[in-house]
Amino acid sequence: MSQIALSPAQVRAALSLLDWSNQKLADVSGLYVDTIAKLCRGESKSHNKTIEQIKTILEREGIEFLEKDGVRRRAQDVEIFEGPERF
Image: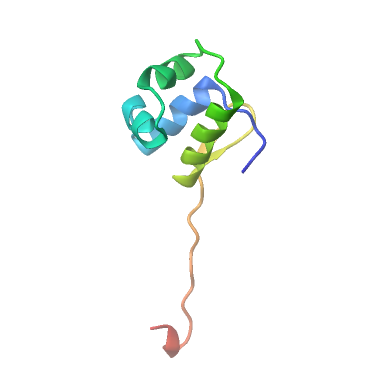
């Protein structure tokens, strides 16, 4: 897990990449949807534990957080099959 802090813009971008609503993240995380909404609007200073929980969930779903509010989907591993035993 990276050490980059999450910004409201990164959370919004990650949710968009996943096509998730605030409600979906609330359901998966067990947090209140209002907590997620306030975080996304930058209206709340969430506890580090809450931020880490959200970050862990989003990273598990394939989101990678970058410096300067960057967000992207993590590259999928590609396995190359060679030889007849791999068919």
